[in-house]
Length: 319
Image (cartoon, rainbow, N blue to C red; front, side, top):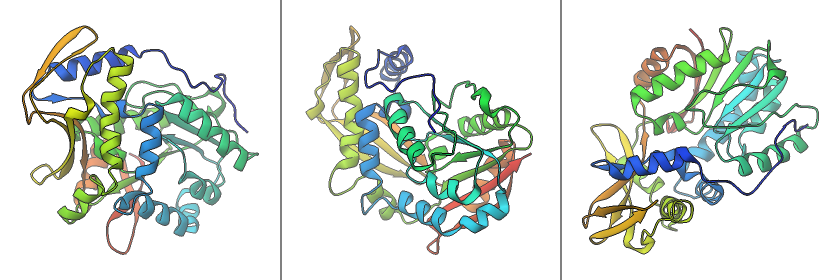
């Protein structure tokens, strides 16, 4: 059952935080913008298309782990918890977990409200006896959980290695915030992408069909549409780069030639070859993931990994 005080809508006003982050990011040197602003309606749809690409291993690998280890999750997590999913998106992987642990409620959190309500309605139809309580919001900022789950033990679900999109200090801060939000008896099931061959990593973020490029360039389309920008989309190129020193893939939008453009009435300049750094995706070794979780207030309990060692699902307990 879908329980929400907010009706589904496919129109949105200009977000002042979007304006602030974009204006600040374009004024920086080097230029950089937070990855959360990829996810308007079109960006969310493009990301779902990315997850089906042959080069993009994380989604199918994590989904296979969720499908394969249902009995293990039930044994390790138990039943009767409220599942709180951070950055739920389409919730495509989530049914495997819900079927395994028989939760008392499901709370998907996502910044894209129209996309969230559509996916929540579909999931509520698939699980008619499960209270589905969507929360529209940015999980990087303070949130209130629905009063309906007050007093319930909680399982945080943070799939997709979204934690890797954050710098290590910000990732620790987020994990600590999750720890406070979920409570002392909480558990956290989190996806962690592992360090692997450079060529495989780059291909996953620069696919042959150009879907990831369209996803990256959609940010410019959104800036032009919502912030009265005049950025020439065709004069930007998508770049995916492996930064070995920081163990991360970086996505950039590179100016093909010198550019002058406006956003919200302010002028900006980019030299040829200059980039806007739009996303980082950090990859982790086994030791790194444990250190990160412990710094964030979580004690790793067990993990499940595919046979190739591409991706891990880690269960941690509130420390």
